[in-house]
Image (cartoon, rainbow, N blue to C red; front, side, top):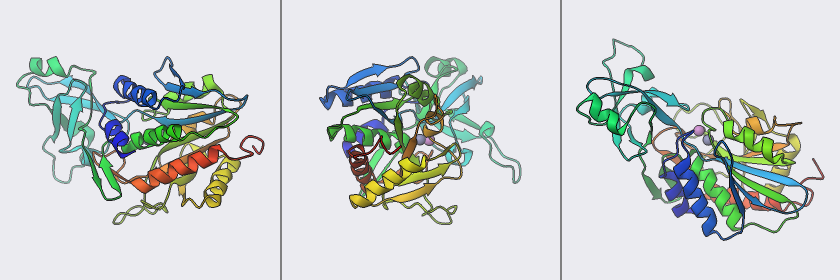
Length: 334
Ligand code: CO
Ligand code: ZN
């Protein structure tokens, strides 16, 4: 799984420009030789279906990553940008970014007045261009940069960019690799444009009309120095979501997940995220409403160039999902 995550994490795939990450995921899926039916919808969601009985389960993880979109190029070749997804200017300063064509840039800032707060509009991307024309050639207005790829393994801990949400994509692939036989259809969906408002998930859920949905995404932890209070720690197991800003878990789905974890001795935590959301926010409101649950991977420094997760949380998430899929009264109890 580590190699898969290394490949996915380092692939370019900003929201709305998911072509590269989608084709990488297609490759990974094809290599699994599971005879899934693959489809890409109009927005770019990648849907891998394993047919079964009448009931349908949707298992989703977003494949897009946060980015910077070029809005203006000045005469000296410095690029101004607007954020695609949530960015903190204090984290961007000094970060290396990379464009689709491989052009690398670093983020600099204007001089600040005394005690002036650092805002995104004080920042610019420097790709080392000597003029506006030179910058325009490789990074025209509308092009997008993501954090520069890197990946390291240190003991149980993995560090890289875009682990939000390539870690969850990796979990889905591993679930597919170990897919148990079940008597219902499973649609695995790698969604687009989550970071800009849970958009791909909305059309995916609408067309698939599942009877039950599960989302895998990352969540924050409360285990770093003076972190905001939160009862989720790295390495203590997948977090079963109770609530976030856009979603309250379906009580029965949440209970089924907890039951499954206890029954199989899989460590887990309960997650209440006071800010932010996941694809579940749009999925559960689709059609007449869809019973939905979320498994969250504890992650430090989300939306930074170097996010950290614990490998054991990934493995336990795979175990939890595979066991959940085999639960006897998955649909009858909803
Ligand atoms: Co995110
Ligand atoms: Zn995410």
